[in-house]
Image 1 (cartoon, rainbow, N blue to C red):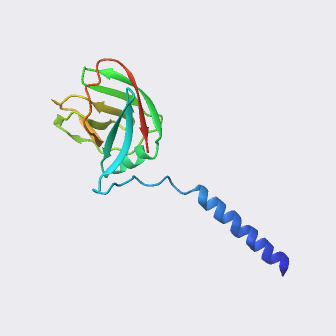
Image 2 (spheres, one colour):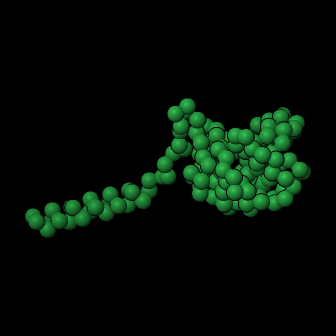
Length: 145
């Protein structure tokens, strides 16, 4: 009887440990205003990224912390390909706003630092508050949860 009890306790311990390994990263943090925020560091300056409430934003959040070498494109955006594809739901955006963070396709993360019209389709991930002009050079961007 004692051996069965010890065996049962051991089995329960294994189940608990295995279950803990399957716990996903904490869901997106929500501040007192109900906004989902993460920290973004660009050129040694901290910004706040307000995340959208969609599956793509949640999946990208679960990749954080993330450091990306982002390439310059068109004098208005920085982009980097993620190592992993994520769910995406592209829509006609029509107008990109300074600070928009979008997903192009299922693995290209884009930060826009100017406002302009577009005919491309993107999945909106969020918006970086008060984003500066990032200039025409490639740069490193850090996303922290």
